[in-house]
Image: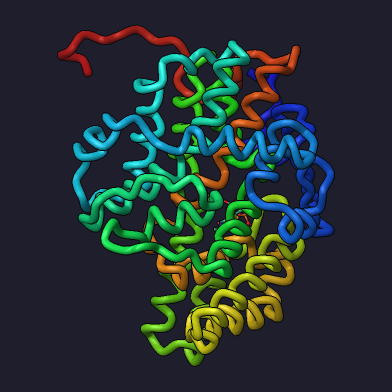
Length: 395
Ligand code: CMC
């Protein structure tokens, strides 16, 4: 049994070769296909980034227009999907609903389920990118009892999502460009992050030859957990709780609780397996947070003030300094989303929407890799050696 390397949590095992995303955790650097996240977040939109992740290069003008047209051609979902959605309780967690809806897509789009067929994979990719916003918005509308809003394809990807979320058939919805840009930036910052837990899940799931929708649904399920994509929701709940219990004055007490391991309380939105420096996405998110709050006249939002103070105190505290714990992308993204009007339990759904392209790009890369095999980890067996089944009266 000693033949295998034992590496719980994959701290030092590379599960694949990849040319998509590069992270330098010590420097706090993130590159998609070589381009720094700071440049992509300021010079490109989310669909440009999708194209880049999927194809390896940024689109020229013609390619950009064609890709945009292709995506908007697929924004509607099969009308039957609303009946599927209706089977859920209205008070279900949106991530439970989304896991089901995405997995269910394989039952609706039979011409794009063969993962080994490049054409199938291509249509599945476009369908997933185009339909995720529609599905997330439908899950929200269902929950609050409002009619679904069909996509309006003259709008941008982010603008369309805002309208499907907050528009009603009763009146024209005017997209606020600052919120549109902020949401687009959230999508860009979450688009890919190399071999994180959900991406590794998608690769492992897809390695069995299952259909692409099933593999992406596995990613959605994995992302849900509070150590991963669920951290944005958990972070906002944490900030609200501190606020309700006395706000800034109680930060010291809260930090002490985090440092006392027996409390089991973590500073959500802090720490990362790879970044041992400031997460570059957190910097951009903080900037966006400021822009959105200013636009909405919420500059004095107490949660933003609380978050900044919490960050400042944590960054000066030995516990966090020694462990190299810095804010990650989720520390500020919740405040932005909340200001836009997105309910807290939908935050992780937004993350899933944005990460879908990364999952697909990674899945495609794996299938195209001549060395790819079904993912099948080995184990170090620690159970009982061989023994005989005793008769019932001897147990
Ligand atoms: N608050 C308090 N202590 C922490 C935290 C935190 N947020 N994160 C790590 N630590 C401590 C941890 O207890 C350990 O201490 P010690 O060495 O004394 O045992 C040390 O720092 C190293 O942490 P670890 O748990 O061994 O690190 P990991 O790489 O296994 O975990 C993590 C990484 C992200 C799961 C963890 O930092 C965490 O749970 N953070 C809070 C949840 C969060 O914000 N997650 C979002 C990650 S970014 C978005 C995404 O990719 O999904």
